[in-house]
Picture 1 (cartoon, rainbow, N blue to C red):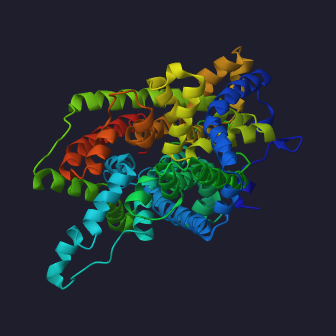
Picture 2 (picture 1 turned 45 degrees about the vertical axis):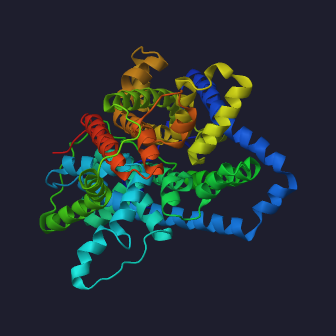
Length: 543
């Protein structure tokens, strides 16, 4: 038994944790009803994919067991594991440095580091190809030192690097929120029992981080499986690229078979996620006031920590910005289709804000079921909500087009259908962050509020939601920032004439007008970074 378990008393009722056994029945039933409606919407693309796969018949089975298809599976798994591991190794120390240490300018480092997630993966991949390719910027810098030609970056290495850089913030946000809510008294108790700083981290802090770390790693793995931009630009033959090729050739039956295989891999990930989660208690059980977290002095490690943060920011943000600026000032600007930046800004921010609010509201009952109403039915209900995130945006969009044209023509090519597409794709981002926040809140607070006369939902609104505000805002931030850069869903489901930064950047790249990518790309990065800074401003800080 770990030392943390010895310090924290266990409260069990009939073999189940107190937090999971005393949730109000009315709350659970209403949350289940709303969650069932949300999951029904999420399952629409999967139902249509299943129907499309059935239409393939025996040809679909033959295609599934081909050696080429098996190589695609192996490529996708290798890419997912590599990028997730690298992102975790970067995210955990970065989250600790920007939350619990005396790192100089830690809020600035945080915003600059997280800005990597607002740059579209295909834009990051294009700038990396320009910077690190055989004839790129790095090659020109190294030529005076006798380096005549760098190896090509495209392929597995380029795709893994790109996905690592754009996904590590998905782990940073929930892990950093967990760091800020760790109980200082537990750490002091561990130190009083003879643990050094590494022992305290491993036995006291790490168990408290496990729900947030598990949720962040799941989001990263799902992103790696479903991303199209990085693998397309880096020409790596993974699932999404193969699905896109089949879709582009109008072989929707084979595309559906591949997509269903992708859903199957998602289910495997979700099962592993459920087993890895710590099913114990992650909230503070003491009755006194919570101890104020103190910044840990870095001492002689301050310079290496600054170098680490600077390297992360340089790789994730500075290199793309340098390439974009070089395109902006080094080429003749050609804009074949002029779209006012004010219109792009209005459309992008507006639809992103609406989608983020809708997704946050939809995720709320699912997160409550996961944290307070644990059962096999509720867990599978929550797991099904994650299915839409692994589907490529183009598959979700095409399935919704088929659904709307056959059943609800009135919402075809409207903002409502576009927001539904965003919600299906990014619902897990909000569910994971909100669930980890609820898991750290002692349910006795709600019980105390009810004993004072509050109704169950009043206690939830006045006690639980304010305490979980950091996690809820983290989920809202993830959805908002990802909707801003979402491309396939926007291209297919947008109303006629509706343009965003993402669609403008892609059209310029597709027509090889690189100089036209620079300005909307830079504005997109700036707006996203400002939005992220505003959202994080309300987060708790350490001294």
